[in-house]
Length: 303
Image 1 (tube, helix red, strand yellow):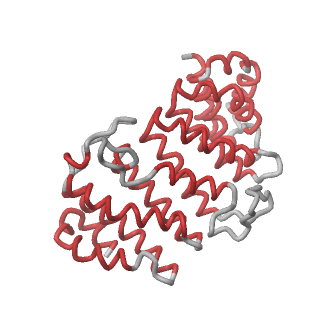
Image 2 (spheres, helix red, strand yellow):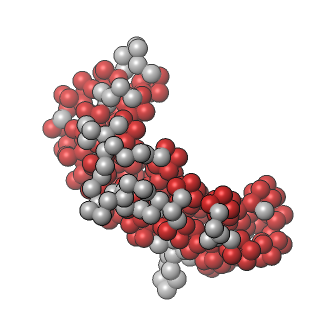
């Protein structure tokens, strides 16, 4: 069903209402593979109906009256998003949680800010406050899918980190600010404290990279609204730009650029260390993708 909806797109419209009840009924099926497939299929229905009733190109932070403009899409979102959010919040299987996170990110990227914020009196299909709370529970290893969950919320640096799960969470937490813009700020304030422990020396480079990626993209989308975060965060970017991990150097170098652009006071206070770090990242033996980010960061610094 999911593959048919994904590839047939608008041609699948006559079948959406026929298959939807069965997919919703399978949302909490006992076998995790079925829940993964159901989650993907529900997302494909949204893709199909959006091809029938095209969603206008959205602008960052601009909430439109989606119930009026795309009533069929809105009606489907109201039925699909709740079950997807439920799987993200409650499922005990990491693959299902990761798939739900990816699905929610795909819908947010397709629909834009109106998927997470609505024109009153309507309520948004996705509850961003709840989504961020779920992400925080994952970061603090309190989620039902994490065997290392601790009652006190302390992050275990030696815990087994599922790569697919973290990639999916990062996708969601970097897509939301792209859609919301300055409206992302209160949610970023909620996320930052549980993100910071992942930047400690005791954590692996993969943890550093995921935290830096979320922070850098958040500041990139918040723009000057996030300037007051930059003073404390810019030195962290400088330090992590020296990582042995290419991905970590790539993200941290990008982070130095956006934090310097949107946090001028922080950039002036750390100018020498930032320039030294960027010079090192532009060396001939550096990876090309890191050098590209260093050139971009230097350009942002001089704007």
